View 1 (cartoon, one colour):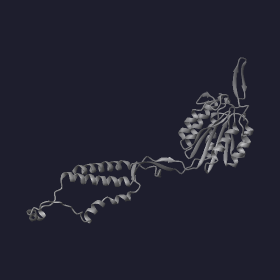
View 2 (view 1 turned 60 degrees about the vertical axis):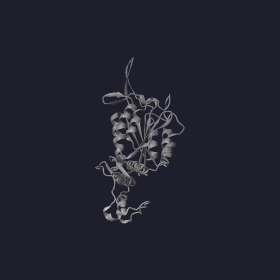
View 3 (view 1 turned 135 degrees about the vertical axis):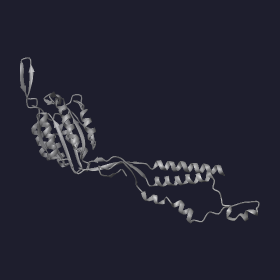
View 4 (view 1 turned 180 degrees about the vertical axis):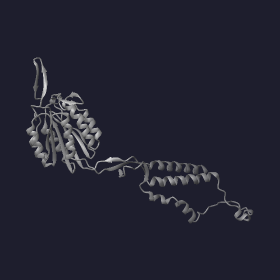
Length: 340
């Protein structure tokens, strides 16, 4: 038994799986009281007449060694029953996700993601750094979903399998870098969607969601983005696409400054079609503030499960009393053999 549901206000306790076995504790005493004593075989060569005159005054004397043996046997019996009752240590309650949603993040790590057109905490950063920071906060809020991470450049790569461990997902996303999937990364949007569909098709889930972040167009891969979107719709995978990148930035050169559009390669038409085909929605993130607002909006569209359940980790303890019972039994056997 892996665990039991418990209130979050619970404390660390020790319980028994089969506590009814403890009613057998007085069994040896009852047998001693109710059953007739075993006959004692005596092979006396001589009969001493005067012992008959003592009558009941000649009561048997229990030696100290016999008393200790009785106590050891009693303790061994108690330990054996405790082990049979299966004591378990219950740890602190841990929050257990119950939403049944599988939520994947697909993050573009192609070369264009190193464009520094985002401002984060007053500093200019590249697009991937902004995504890492804001997606990390979004991940920590998703305490009802199984989360997974797909990275895609020239190839799509399953970076983090589905897990309830939000901290691990955020950590591995933060460790991603430009070109992690290929030496000269491009963008394979279709393959990223196809990989998500393939990995989720055999997973039972009430809801499947893919959040795809990219700043470009599909320039690599074997699967066309719209065909992948159709496969996602058939697999009941809803896709929210986010186009990342500013519309305008100032570039300084030898002949002065000029304004350019760093998102000229962003294929918003295809991203919109992907979202609509799968039943999702397309968003445009031109700044860190807009990206943060999109994540907040996604929290509303795909709300976190409100009803919490708690899981208490269990550790079996039966081997401790069982070991003591075996040890005491061994001592009794050795003591018996020495007295023969």
